[in-house]
Image 1 (cartoon, rainbow, N blue to C red):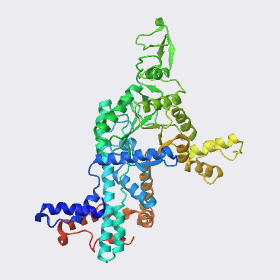
Image 2: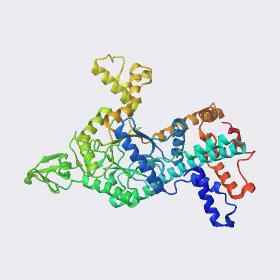
Image 3: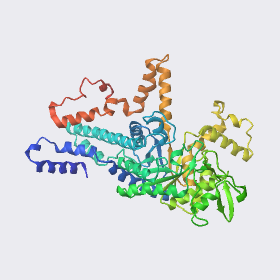
Length: 532
């Protein structure tokens, strides 16, 4: 509905209500409606699920159309990211948000900072989804409010052409609301617990849920040791729980990301149930580290099972967990991915030890022999030392090509002394094209960084503290923060406006007209930034 159509619709409602609504302005109602396009989290989930499905279809046709996101631990961080994207690129197309379970644990738990081990309250995950969308809605309201004020100014100046131009901007306004890929860890309990939390997350606005195949009560960060996977039957029950949650709430095209940690997980808590030779459970058990035993050699309490007519005993640790055979990670990841898609997953996630295009490509090539359109979500993790890894990859490639690498010490390539070297430049070029290369060669649909804003917050605070509490004093803030905000056009330099002060003034004027006591008058200190 166009801006003028919204005004006409509001006018019809007001007219039907009679004289008691005579001071309600149709245009003000139309503006408030446009500023609150998404009434509920389910509205958001349905809207963003359609975006993801459209983007997935586009990627299938053109591998350059991959999508990206950054992890955000607060609604304000997510809001500023989207405002920045619109400012720099003019559109939010193919730009998402990522909700990191790691950052929820480390920054949002009432228990205080926690490791990524699902010890935090699961309710804070859905709360963060809601918070992110609250801030994105406010970004819409703020930006549209600026257009409405510009429209009023154009009308007051008698500039009909300018007014028409601004109305066109309002009619074609692009929202800050984008899809969130939300981490539900290993489901925080059994499949019913997974379903209940999934509903809360979807109701808050999540159109895409990412779940991993670890044991819920033994969950570890994908880049930590001690990961314990579950048999496929257990994991697939949770995939179905997510699908049921989406379908129950009417988000029929909700997206599920199935993550496998098998590449780095050497343990399992269970021996899978086998119904017939060669089935899912039998294949899962085939990766266990076992030894053939005779009944007379069995010890009290031993766990054994039949494999092809032979009695075998799986290697069991003091913890009661069972070990997989070394070197089976690649095969298990491929098997996990194929079976996850068979069970209804839409996208895959494989955690790797280091970021290498060929390793990701090789696993996905094996998956795509069965599912040609299988698409991957890849974690461009801060747990990787990107500089060292890519310098070493470049060093190894050069050595294999017979190029002279005698000027470099492979074990010390992180050293700043190599920053201006030819090898460093070549490594940085590989990093720059890593996402495009992975999407082209390994069918990576979505690239994300799980916790970048955790690191950017720490870095910016360190720089400010060093300068402000040091010799620079107040200049540490002015030169290091405010002057840069002004020069870079950072919206938050007008922090009163960003917090909603102008929106409140607009509403006060709707309610009380000339009697409104507004904050944005001549004596508002923020007027110093009006011409920026």
